[in-house]
Amino acid sequence: MFRRSRFDLSLFVYELLALLRAGLALTEALETLDERRRQNQSGATEEKGHYVLSELIRLMQQGKSFSVSLAAHPDCFSALFVAMVAASEQTGGMTQALERYLQYDGQVSLVRQKIIAASLYPVMLLITGMAVAFFLLWFLAPRFGHVYEGMTHAELPLMSQWLINFGLFVSDHTLASLVCLTTMLAGIAVLAMRPTAQQRCLVLLGRIAWIGAMLKLMQLARFYRSLGMLLQGGVALLPSLAMTRELLPLTLQAGLTRSMLSIAQGKKMSQSLEQESLMTSIALRLLRAGERNGQIAGMLEQAAMFHEREITQWVDRFARLIEPVLMLIMGLGIGSIVVLLYLPIFDLAGSLQ
Image 1 (cartoon, rainbow, N blue to C red):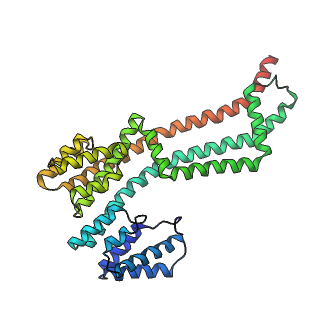
Image 2 (image 1 turned 180 degrees about the vertical axis):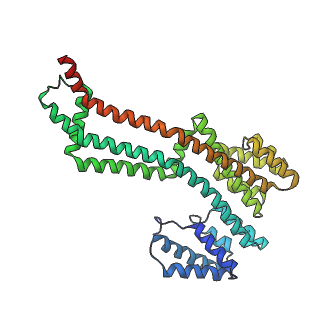
């Protein structure tokens, strides 16, 4: 019933943390949040929130722990969040665990927002180019077709004839053409939001050497940050590695499994991860320092922060590079349409001379 709505985990953690800081007990805080959502069911998201919170309260009233209640809803609460809560239940540091998760989520969201912001302008350029091309086909091509009505097909260049015929078709079926174009763009957008399509796209992009290296760095940076957060929250090393395994691509997951076996046999974490190419040079040096001074979690978070800054700088440079390339492609495409429309006139003028 709630598949199309999304539970906002970040907002839930923020509100829960505020109520716990105010001195409310955990169950009382959940009941307060549930009551607010029940009174303000203005959309599917609020309805989903009321359903999830009421289920959490029901399970906890049956004697289940908060972490077990959260684990009953894996579509709303990630394994990382559940593990942090479970560890905090042992140490009594629930508010600290929620604070760490908010900090983690904020850093991950910041990197994601920078990537989206950098890619927004190129996407707008593509949409604008498609709109201009559609206008030329819908408005100009039919008018040139009427001008060339007296000319035979033999006198018209083949490409110009095809373009004019296509423009006449678009003009005669304007509504159908708009529907097809909109459907195509919407289909691409929906497909791009599917995890399987995203995974295939990442695999294809990963085959390009310089993009593949940066994609791997992005995945490793998220792995370091997630692992550091779990260790900081009191989760043991091997369970933390097992939970962060899903954050890595399939090509690296097998290597992490082998690393876990090596660590279980007594090898150092830095040595085991380095053997499976799961360490960058910066992360390796920081992790070795963390192993010496007992600050592994802090060093992993430092490595993640370093690489996240490197990633955002690369994305900015890539966006600045691709913008003129897209402008050139748009110029060539639109210019080709205009030249093909005027080509019969140029040919006629040449024959008169």
